[in-house]
Image 1: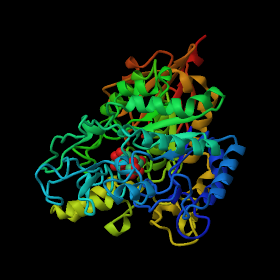
Image 2: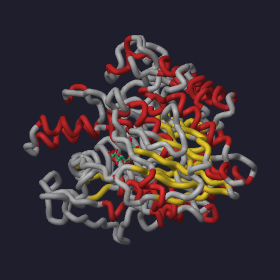
Image 3: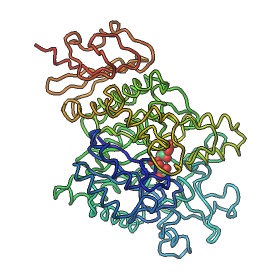
Image 4: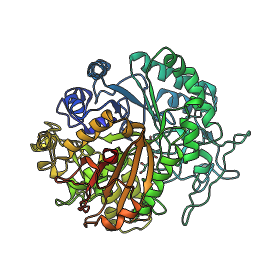
Amino acid sequence: MVYQVYPRSFADSDGDGIGDIPGITAHLDHLTDLGVDVLWLSPVYPSPMDDNGYDISDYRGIDPSFGTLADFDALLEAVHARGMKLVMDLVVNHTSDEHPWFAESRASRSSPRRDWYWWRPPREGMAPGAPGAEPTNWASFFSGPAWTLDEATGEYYLHLFSAKQPDLDWEVPAVRAAVHDVVRWWLDRGVDGFRMDVINMVSKDVAPDGSLRDGPVLGSGPLGDGSASFLTGPRIHEFMAEMHREVFAERIAAGAQLLTVGEMPGVTVEEARLFTDPARAELDMVFQFEHVSLDQGASKWEPRPLRMRDLKASLGRWQAGLAETGWNSLYLANHDQPRSVSRFGDDGPEHRTASATCLATLLHLHRGTPYVYQGEELGMANAPFASITDYRDVETLNHHRHALAAGEDEAAVLAVLARVSRDHARTPVQWDASEHAGFTTGTPWIAVNPDHTEVNAAAQRDDPTSVLAHYRRLIALRHAEPVVATGDFTMLLPEHEQVYAFTRSLDGRELLVLCNLGSTEVPLDPLRADLPPGLAGAQVLLGNLEGAAPERDLRPWEARVLDLAGSRP
Ligand code: TEU
């Protein structure tokens, strides 16, 4: 199991209100107690923090707000001493605009590094800065155009994210070589792999003459969706295979166990099978986005109810699609998504624990590698943010500014942010009931959720009925039972609106997983016809509610893992 740490919000050791690396080192007991195998560390490199470190200005260092390289080495040593591995977050689709490479590139049109980034003149026949003069109509993921004019040279540079995150041009071999050098530098330091940020965006569909195409206009325009030109582009497999060959292959051949996971918005099952096919030596697994887009309309700013049938169809398709070849990553939460118990469960006092543990059971019993995002193991929920001044995230703040400029009603915008903002995942981890939840002795950079007085690690550590205790049991089950790690997956009840059921089977062992994803009780008898035989004599391997019995009706948010093989004579 991989545990994601978002360092800014994990634990602050020096009282500046910002989480840091010594704070992580001081809390490793929490990870080993949980049964963590791999720690995925979100970026800690020097950064102006426009996007909280996903805008890197030096790939070979540690931002002073997080500590020093010596602090990092101490963390790495402590992680290894506990038998865990550490993977870094590799953000190389773009750098910070304050990276020396970009400073050199923007300095002049004849700079040796000019072509390291996507510089283009204004659209044909238009003056620099004129509305619509951007080289393509692409929208940025963070609102507004994906191009910004650099007055000094009269050209625009591409940034799929914020204007402080210029895209590197991976068509340039020297860019790819520089990225390979960065990866080698951290591997030489002893890290065990990388999560690769939006790595399927690094190959743009560019014509031989360097031109890029407009995308279909979004809504009432004028911006368009450029994703057909930059999601899983024409050379992406070539680039992934090249990086594996140039950097990872020889180390793996020498016995190193390295993990690579590519974050790939928009990737399809078919493409993921190619990326994760071991025979193709590209990546070990990918993060796909289908299941976390089902409750979104035209954009994430138009949330809509999630239909259980859609969730089953999506996750079931990914289980089936990567069953023979490739490998799934399993997640419901990360630093970009709202808290899973609030989004997919019920974060009210009555059902928070049950729904958090029900969702965890569902996810962790699927086939693939489960990812736990910091605080998810505590059932941390969305924050009660009421004003835009509560928010910090560039994506959120940009959206708010653009929406209001477009005349949207602020109350409506804030109501959507209250559901979908990335900041809900970025409130400080709730260690105990003290002020600032034990996260800092200073003033936290973002407010601590007031519910930390009830929802915190200290209150759960020794409570066998807590979310934390259930995660511990789930992770131990995966470590103990090969059928959980590698067993075949079969979806059941595809049309049922509330019960999510499936089996896992390996070498005659068969588990039945039943999850009631709703706040009403579901009688079991009407489902029997669609469930495998052996229910009667089954044994309960793991349940999230006390008093679990194989044939009991499913209580609200009840999850039950049954060992059907136990019923075999
Ligand atoms: O996220 C890429 C990405 O697709 C997300 O921005 C997602 O589309 C959006 O957040 C959904 O609301 C990665 C990082 O995980 C994210 O934190 C960075 O902001 C982004 O890339 C740019 O580096």
